[in-house]
Image 1 (cartoon, rainbow, N blue to C red):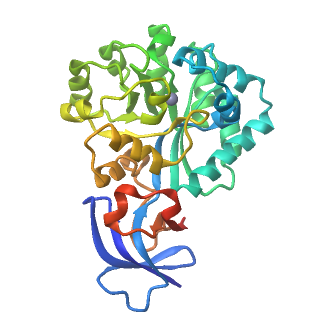
Image 2: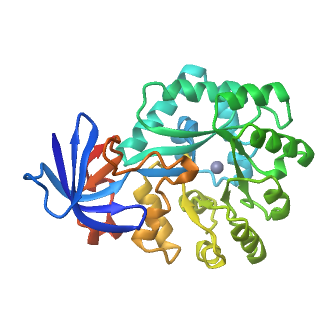
Image 3: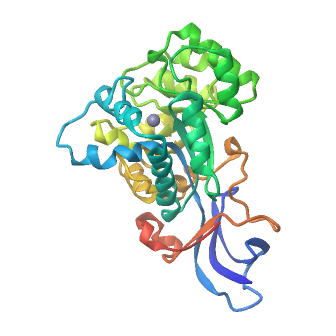
Length: 344
Ligand SMILES: [Zn+2]
């Protein structure tokens, strides 16, 4: 049996309590407030493992090539439909892509990430490679697939969504809207989720975006105040990726979004641009917004969009948390090196 004790983050209240957790054979036996019944094995600050709300994990394959290049890329040139990223992905053999995604998962776990929402390109085949990479992994994944070509194909949709949790749309600007409507309707009919990159490079028509009934939007950096009110009214969370935006010289208007009432989530986006280190992403987020450390942790905590199954302190559940060596007062400057143990 292992007993860990200290300041424990309660995601329901977004507050810490002083207590302890007893774990045996990777199952939580007891969670309590106050002093532990026995001398704790480890002490520190206990946080849920992060949920990285937006990744393109396979892009890690292009990391060294892009980071070594001196070139100043635009969004279109690097990640657009005809961009360098897609060329690199297409020329990479399947086994290399699978091992690259495994490397991405390893990197995430090392940095306290227990789950991620991955945009997987390449249609059915693309999501099958992700499933292969996930085999035997403890990290959880919300798999957002997309049609291989930007057209609606009933058979492809059925097969692809039977292997995925939803669809991840590159942007409405890349599609013939009537085709995209069919894709979105199909996904909803199958009870799957919809995530859309919206207003990243240019402002897009938010009414058209919201009519697709997305569960989550990504970016919205070029959105106007009226767009933010509509998104807030529709209660759709927005995932922001400050480091990825910074690479292209963009600052996401996080405070304006929050002022409008939008729930903010955080992701690391394209793996060739940013590492999967959520501590670094949260530092970047706080440097451009008024979020405090606790609010920023909430922005990468799994919730009911992910069926809430990743983090619980309930007896009988598997643990999914990390123990930090720094006290809760040091959270603002916490880094991955402060992780003393990961329980998953
Ligand atoms: Zn993205």
